[in-house]
Image (cartoon, rainbow, N blue to C red; front, side, top):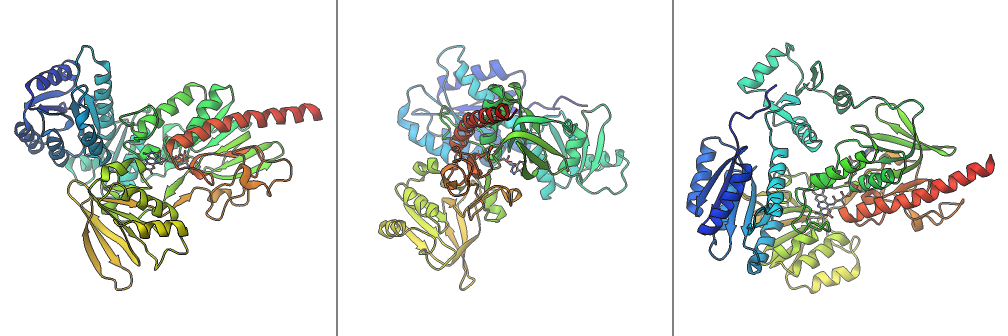
Length: 565
Ligand SMILES: Cc1cc2nc3c(=O)[nH]c(=O)nc-3n(C[C@H](O)[C@H](O)[C@H](O)COP(=O)(O)OP(=O)(O)OC[C@H]3O[C@@H](n4cnc5c(N)ncnc54)[C@H](O)[C@@H]3O)c2cc1C
């Protein structure tokens, strides 16, 4: 099994300022020179020529660091070119210490995805803060690239959604994979060597076990089985708490429950991290002024919960929940079930998607699901579109209009009266830079370096119109993952789980604890909960708070058990 890349990837350092160029080059070469080809270029033109040459030569570029400041005016332009030439490379600007004058431009570039990070040029040695940021950028690049070490090999058609899903899922679970296009010579040779007769694609080869396992178009459960993740829990397994979902809310509950001595099980249908795990940069999580990749944040929380002793079961979907005396019984997609004294439902929700593939590809790069409040200040002078007819779309439009040049609200229906509060409709009407278009839908759009146009269809005439657009915010509702709770816990009309005060009439035994559902001992946290804020920090907060009430519930159950014995 090869563990080495044939050619080392490159780091390109660029600056017009001689001193910045020298400092960055020396710092980066000294630390990373053994694993990367570090190339320094004096000035934007030289840097771009080098990036073109790397592209033409098929070389991989892991990171481009470009100086930016009074003597380095083209720094952002170099990174914009780098983005086009090497879309997978990480991009960072290096600014001088105390150069606050350019902070706004740098923050705007961060918000619109033009750069991944800003670094402060090292002024002393060793500057561990600088190197930590560089290392994190390289780690993010490594996660998205194939390293040469293939714990799992996938051979398939890169254009199919299953191939994409598998690559994404392995990467999100930190499993090194090698993907090979079945139409390439290598892909075909690999497939032939497996001796399979016209197998269904993709073919997955699990290579880290004593005997490699070959699977043709496997299900998630078959992959989990081959990984040894399906070791069934003992038939008499009983946990203090079972947490369903390993997004930010479930992981926070797991960290607190396991660290406070509760025997904790976490069941996750897909990969660690939930929605947050798919976000390349979370910019509003306290404590990370330069943002943090959702993947890093949640993977660290997983490791933390695991190190405190939580048990994880991946690739298992929970399909049902019922009470059996003091126990809560959780049924899973592989037909097994497990018992726990208490349950935390943290199965989150998904934004309703627009289903326009060319726009899906630009998420975070001009296209945003949700209000993305932190992106608003970067919209100064821009033409912004908001899709949706509900209160959240109205609020987003009003907020964005404080910054953007123009905001256009695109509404599928013929009016807003049924879907939006009267006060918001009045506010929209009173805002001079907001316009509303009814009976329209977005059917296309794109741009070479991020969003620059949308195609809007008039639903009454069927005519399509291309419009210039700098950003698109989609607020077309979210759908909670709660179908499996049918008949067990109370949900609202949209399917979100009701907790605490929402349930005053549903419970006759005692008033529910905060975050407790209609089934005693079953709590709901994060996006899945009715009234939740739909943010990473609030999901984490609810996960942590729920554990306090879990203790209270378990204590109450212990008292009842002692009293009746
Ligand atoms: C692209 C994107 C960018 C975002 N950016 C930001 C941001 O910058 N800042 C911010 O504050 N918020 C952001 N959000 C919102 C934020 O990610 C969510 O509010 C947060 O992830 C909610 O956490 P959660 O744990 O409640 O649910 P989720 O993150 O949705 O996690 C739920 C987990 O439960 C699992 N699950 C579902 N059903 C089952 C089942 N039946 N059995 C087992 N497991 C199941 C899912 O696979 C998933 O892993 C973003 C969201 C998206 C999609």
